Length: 392
Image (cartoon, rainbow, N blue to C red; front, side):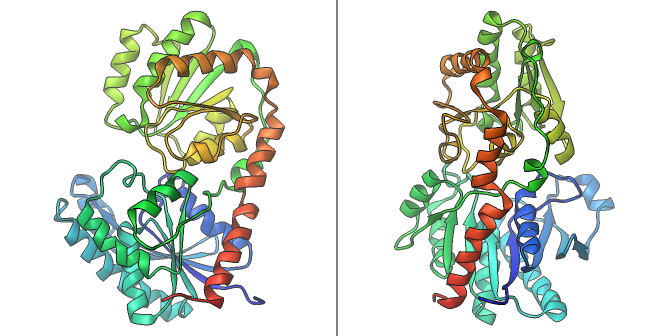
């Protein structure tokens, strides 16, 4: 097609402020599309929890409209007063989302395609817009809730219509494709990985000397990230390699338990908790580490792993769903979930064989497979296909 399409992004979560990591890869894909000549907008009902007490009194309410580096972005700030009633949240999302859509269309006209990032709850809004305006939408599903069994069969049945009416369905790893093909009837899913921003691939690789060898993990401090397994594995490896260190970036409800475990293992000097990191701080922390570890029990993709690869760092990751579509033997290694001994052995092996990993080739692998140009060129073909032959 000669003229590139007008794409409206509807994400189920999105960065709340500058440098927020939450949903940053949705924003980065939207920015990549804009850089490649697409007209791109974002609408997002940003609904806060009642648990955010400060937010009830001091954070904004109502419509916020701004241009984010070329992305025409419309948010509606609201508090969810019934946090346990998902049907209520879904209805608020649709109600506020339709208002945002009408405001957006008043300024920029109807989009050609809507691109949903995770269908709960954004897919319901896209379906409502399609029924009202007959605008096709595609879905990229990211949520690990499917793999973790956190979505009820009743809700799967409700989601079936969202999937059925979508013109193209994408999952961010090959194992996730298989899972969603089993979850939803008579609908095919295709694999397309998440994007790694040029913000990462353009950074110069920093090589760390052996005498400062350090592993790093960036993750939410929650049980599904298996950071207790990582700490136990590191304690075994450290006995054999006393000069190595481990940095853990992130925050969450398991922090106090993990700190207690580190104290119990007498590793306070070797394991440091970096706290919640901004995007810039993540780049700095990973760049100044030797290797990245992703010990998760569930990952639909594992965007932090490709960001580490983009910075030239080899990765040790578990076979938890997403990394199997990312990690090859040239750029890292895979281990089984919750296998402390294997993780420890691979940490030692990576230290001993570190000289065989070529940081420039690792970065090149990430650029060739997950960069803005690599992913947007594939998305362009999908958009053209949908506009040429819209379904439903």
